[in-house]
Length: 319
Length: 294
Picture 1 (cartoon, rainbow over the protein chains, first blue to last red):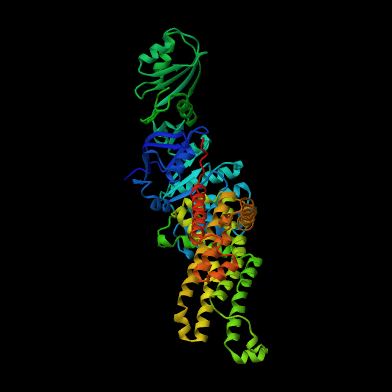
Picture 2: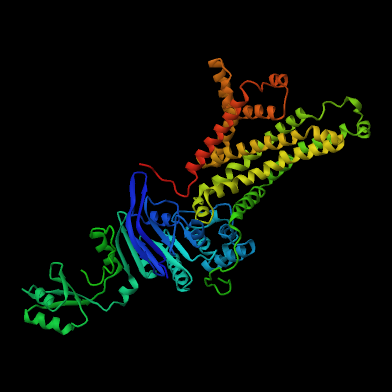
């Protein structure tokens, strides 16, 4: 089965600036997160996948089909929720969604039925006959989601779906995204600045930095990984870290006695205590800790972006 | 995604043919325009010249009606190429107001709230988007120009006798070609200014400016440079010159109406240049995302 999205040396240039620089990778998660600071190329990547921008080199594929040569077919299979406001102010919500569904190829009757269903699904059923211009920001976001899913796409591209939402609306939006993902009938790509949004929904994450891939990791595997991350606060002791490394652990010191250790499967915690005792090191504090998406993101931002290779499993034990 | 279940469900039903998608834009465009009562009222008003023309042709060919009205043989004019040209000129003027009123708003509304990206993320191209929008104006203007003109032509042919039809069949072609050129021109200008300024009121004002201020500018140029080539920027006049030739106006008639200030080829070149400029503007500005070039 082909990956949802594949990139082969994908390079996009706007004006004289290279925005995406030789991206390589395959995204096959059910829900893919797209992370990166402002100007890293997230929206450009989405626009390229929609065919709005043409690559100057390389290619992007969706469901194994090249975007450039299968644009019409792929657009019919994609639902897009843009970051900015995108609606027709003097149209009622349900008419707008019906209109968009008809443009995607649904016959009139079906489009009308699906528009109503989509509005009820996103929780705007009661407001569906109101003009879009009168909607609040949160309602507009939900209306945008409704138009993105009304025609039953196989891939939904959500550009900053929680932008401007209050906490309650944000939870509702993420709940909807998870529900859509869990149906198993549609893949979702979310671009967001908010790490928590991505962490709550996604099973794979692509981190961009300066138009290059900084990290591509499978959060699902990360969650399943059997590695134990240990954070210690210890008194200074000569040779303690070297001895721990000698046991086969990866470890790093962050100063002021703070130490981070990755325990392989075959190492028991008792051995750490024993080593500490041998070096007369006092363990003042000990936490089990796994790498959060924030750690992965910060590491990706600190490191040099990969040009042509994908940093698979960057969180798997490297500190 | 049933309402009562409130769960997402993919769509596996039938789809409409890809070629017909632009008609969705046309249908919604017409529906939006006619949701305005003043616009609907004006569109109805645009049919009045047709009804007046129909009544005129009937009276001209019906002695009983002439007697009832007491006009007898004093009824002025004959229904010939000049009559049809005048009729179309009047209808074209009304059609222009129709296009200036309804045309720019169709596009500017899409730009006002960035919905163009939503259209273009669907399986329709920029050309189809434009075709869908232009079809709205084309349908409206067709209903108020060449369709009523051809109806009048055939009514005249029927009342006059078949010999008239074959002798004047070229006029049917002139009506059709002349109107299609006008519709294409007016639609393109309407769309191009809307895409360019992205604000309905400004777009309508600009369109009026193109059709009313440019001729004035042309006349100023003519006076300053002591030439007649300033008329080239007068679209309406250039169209009139083309129409005058299409309707086979005699040289003296063209001269008296000022339809020979520039040669026919120059009028065509002017109109084609305007069309090319509109296409260029549309190609440059009608995009889902605009790229700021640095």
